[in-house]
Length: 108
Image 1 (cartoon, rainbow, N blue to C red):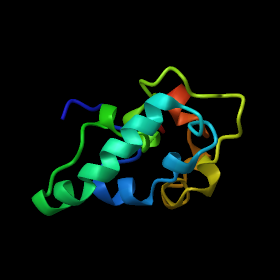
Image 2 (image 1 turned 60 degrees about the vertical axis):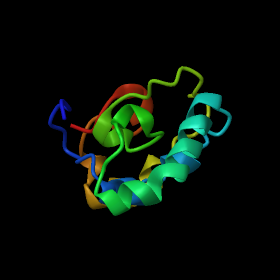
Image 3 (image 1 turned 90 degrees about the vertical axis):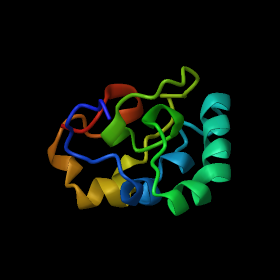
C-alpha cells in the first residue's frame, strides 16, 4: 500500500477501535468532519467487500498512517490518544511520539 512500516498497523480492526474521530483536536475541523461523514456512509460497504479506505480518507488511526492532511486541526486542544484502545494495546506510551500523531507522525 505504500505505507512505511510503523509500530501500529493501518487495518480495519484498529480503525474500528480508533477514537480520533471524537478527539477535541478535530472537533471543529471542517476537513475532518467531511472525511468522517464520508467514511460513515461507506464503512458498511467497505466491510462487506473486505476493503480498506485510503489512509488519506480517514480522519483517524494517525498512529499508523501519520500526520493528518487536514490543515484546520486545533492543536491547542487536548489530545486524547492516551484514552484510545489502540494506544493502550500497542503500548504507545513507550514510543515516540507519545500523542498528537495527527500532527507529529506515526508511532515508532
